[in-house]
Length: 260
Image 1 (cartoon, helix red, strand yellow):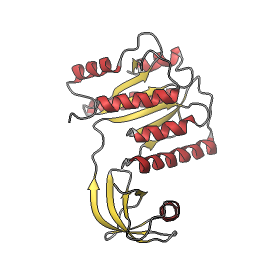
Image 2 (tube, rainbow, N blue to C red; image 1 turned 45 degrees about the horizontal axis):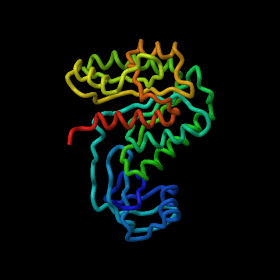
Image 3 (spheres, rainbow, N blue to C red; image 1 turned 30 degrees about the vertical axis):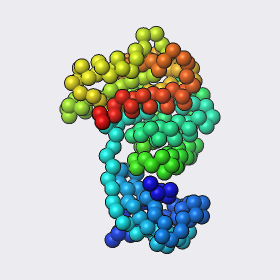
Image 4 (cartoon, helix red, strand yellow; image 1 turned 90 degrees about the vertical axis):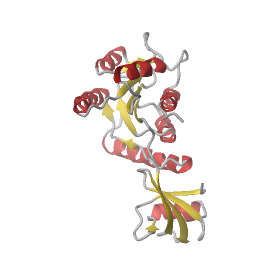
């Protein structure tokens, strides 16, 4: 694999001209030079193997030598993550991208201590999208996760219920899980076994809800269960919310991989 990866528009007549930001990063930061091999990707699974032909900061030119289309993971996973304190969400976004999350929904909950409004929210979301792009370049993920606007838990659960109604018309079913410290939470394997027994197949879409510091409140957990979410334990130890998000995504991605 080439050491150089860039996010790029689709080629025109076999040529890609990178925008100024990507051009600067490629030739000034990473010191790519004419003749070097560069992998360009569009964030939707298409990659182009290219030769760098012009090393200009304002607009690097790439000549496409091969095109590749990568298949997404067998299960499209949404991470619905309650906003943590400080810059922890930045790390969660990067880890979620590395683990192949298809969608990330930041949540405002009862115990959320960070509240984003207006311009501050827009700037944060843009920062998270930049972080996801950097992580995708680093790990070779050709897919960029969708990162939505911040939603309240009530808004998110209402959207899930609306989607459930639409999914019934198309015979689609989503596995809905919430990481839980509350009594009665079951292991992930038990939830997957139950899903496969009920639907006759492994899930092709799933949602993981992960709470903030202090977890979801009992009322929020009950609202999640009412919306069809299964409380799942991540083990006997109390995890930080960023560790919980990474562990939840990793185990579910592993368990839903297509058999080799």
